Image 1 (cartoon, rainbow, N blue to C red):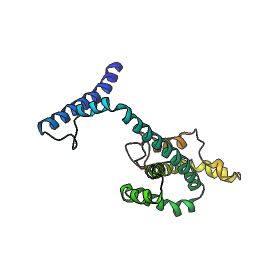
Image 2 (image 1 turned 135 degrees about the vertical axis):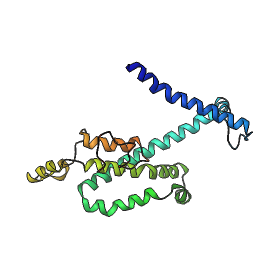
Image 3 (image 1 turned 90 degrees about the horizontal axis):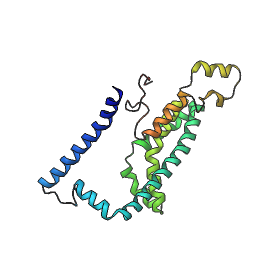
Image 4 (image 1 turned 30 degrees about the horizontal axis):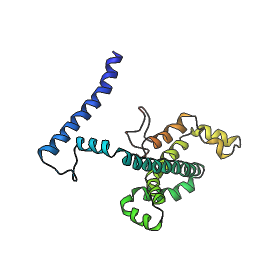
Length: 202
């Protein structure tokens, strides 16, 4: 029974994807849509075949920017989240500005970033970093603040420093939320699509 379930788990999305590609190609051909407006799957495949080397170079540039922005967002966002978990006053003081940064449309500030930052690579890196920064900060903050309050009180009772009161990196409460941030940079910490079954939204 298990192999049959695995088969449909793979075959169902592949079948839907194939049907969508066929529908896409049919609409383009029946409506005679120009290639420069909406190319069909066959035209895209032909372009990939003929212009593969040049497109591969562009793909490598995109991947480099994406990975660099993710690394920068993880380092800076994780550090800020750690500070937020150690200081409630700092969190309520700065977190609203992180929200403002998230809700600001990137297309509205991208021209300004390109003007202010003269180097194209660095300008694109800043734009990608803005997109990835808030999910990592918010989810990591939630994960670090999810330590058992009774244990935190016990640590403080014995005079422990604030750092040991935070969840250890390998504990479930510390790892689930930051993992969500890396898995879905566009989701908020309360998003149901990334929440584990049975977990609370609070």
